[in-house]
Image 1 (cartoon, rainbow, N blue to C red):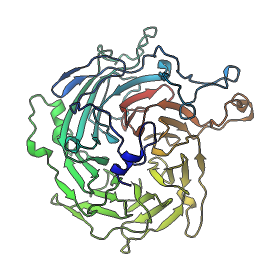
Image 2 (cartoon, rainbow, N blue to C red):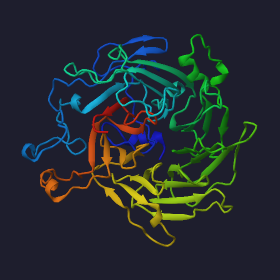
Image 3 (tube, rainbow, N blue to C red):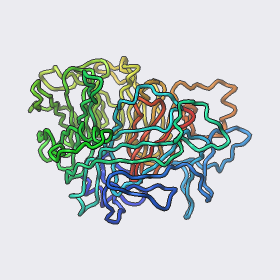
Image 4 (tube, helix red, strand yellow):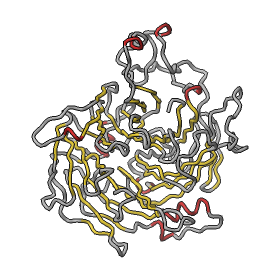
Length: 493
């Protein structure tokens, strides 16, 4: 289904199908202006803007409780994604459940983005504030505004933790200005077409004083895949007086192998691999592999990987096998491939759902675990060691908590039991697969119907589409959707 068809079929609170463009409500606002849900005004100066932080409770009723005790359970407890708000009601976050919470509203939705690694350190202290995030996103402007579509390179800084006056800071490394307003800086690359999916690839320089080379691949509505080198854009954020060459906004390569077939699946090979490779999948079920040559040019294998009978919705490289990747499709199958196969046919195929499978995530800590999410709201975890030819394995875990399509699923980068899931019911949920209740604990959750004990946290975000863990800041998440961006960290992860 094309996005233009999707616009006609989806409106209001309808769930967003993988890759579909929502009906935007921006009133011709200029790209790059962001405002805070909790502030009436915002300041803008060129491409550097101050955006306020979320987290203050709303005066209206509708907040949710964090943690449920049997003696306090009310059968009318509001569960986001299950219950509907009445007219005039709004949900307000409970500040006590967040360590950090910020939101930014963009004039046009950015339904796909990627978090970038930076030079600020790996595994930085959990209480190191204010925080900084670098990211890249692609816009999906409404019909008639296609020329306004951009790739946005973002730097979010001065992201403060929740203001708790009654608590004294225990982190001596916290900056004195941790409570200042957040700052957003943007660099726009005008591309004139909607971005269905965008992913970044970064490879560190041999010179530690130089930033990593950062490429982005944007799968567009037109069917082309645009590869940009955004290293200069990132450099411009932190180098006073740095002037961007207009030529740096031009793609360094355009993949046209998909012709006019749009797609939603993009996956870069891992940074540890010597050769950059890019997988892209389209609605016809074709998967193409593009390789960067030694001289910096790019070559796309004209022969696609084929075998899916529906749209390729997601692609994931194996974390341990350089030539192995997985694909998910609207035909309900997950397939495992080996790029060395001359036949370009799948090595394994599993019927994993009776519905479209929208998303995949391959655990980087436990390489035999693969998570998937489908159109019916079910997400599952698979043990690839059980996948054999001519067999139909069962997932090692599956959850039906969400009642709308799963739009994003991602393993925690350093904890193989924690998974983040986004769904069309306006919720982003966090799960701890290590949780197993014993008989004594079960009695305290008996009155909480249909809520699995593995459910750790529910974050409400309108039309949430995609989420990513920050690879260097433990427990920090960034999400995007029809309502803009959110950056947060809960006290539970």
